[in-house]
Length: 93
Image (cartoon, rainbow, N blue to C red; front, side, top):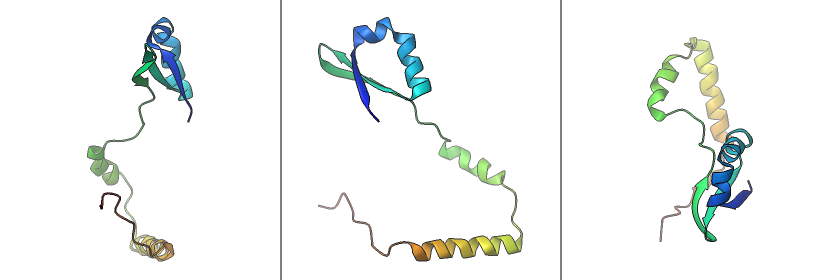
């Protein structure tokens, strides 16, 4: 996504408009002070917290034995289609 630049002064003068553009259009802005980048105004990623996972899993309906077996088979089929390459370690020197 394209990131726009604007001066801190411009941002202050149109603060509400810029916040709405971020919130509703997903735009991003780099704020400049004296032509030097100082800050970024961007949307906060939406999503759930890892701490909420247990409750989310508990809220799912229970699978029957047949459904669980079908699901396990689907997972194994998907794994069999994955590439056999081992990912490289980006931190290895």
